Amino acid sequence: MSVGPETAPPAPELGDGRRARRAAERRRARSGRRVSIIGVLGELLITAGVLVLLFIGWQLYFTELTVGSELRSEASQQSREWNEQAAAAPKPSSTPDRRAHG
Image 1 (cartoon, rainbow, N blue to C red):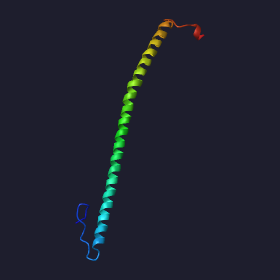
Image 2 (cartoon, rainbow, N blue to C red):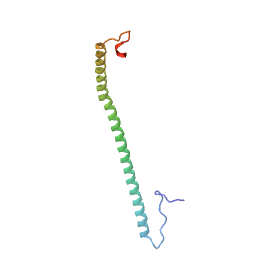
Image 3 (cartoon, rainbow, N blue to C red):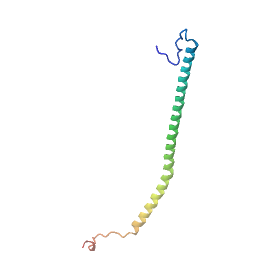
C-alpha cells in the first residue's frame, strides 16, 4: 500500500509527536507547491504555443491575401506586355533565311 498525496501520513511515534506532524505537513506543502508551480508553468507554455500557432496562421493568411493580389496584378501586366511584344515582332517566314547559314 503506497502513501500518496491524498492519504493521511502514518501515525507518528510517541517520542516525536508534534515535530513529526509538522515535518509531514511541510513535506506535503512543499510537494503541493512544486506541483502547482509546474502546472502553472505548463499551462503558460501551452498558451504561448497556441498563441504562436495562431500568429503564424494569421501571418500566412494575411500574406496570401495581400501578396497574392499584388502578384496576380503583376502577372496580368507582364502577360499584357508579352502579348504586345509578340504582336510587334516580325512573323517567321516559311522559308529558311540563307544568309544566316552561310
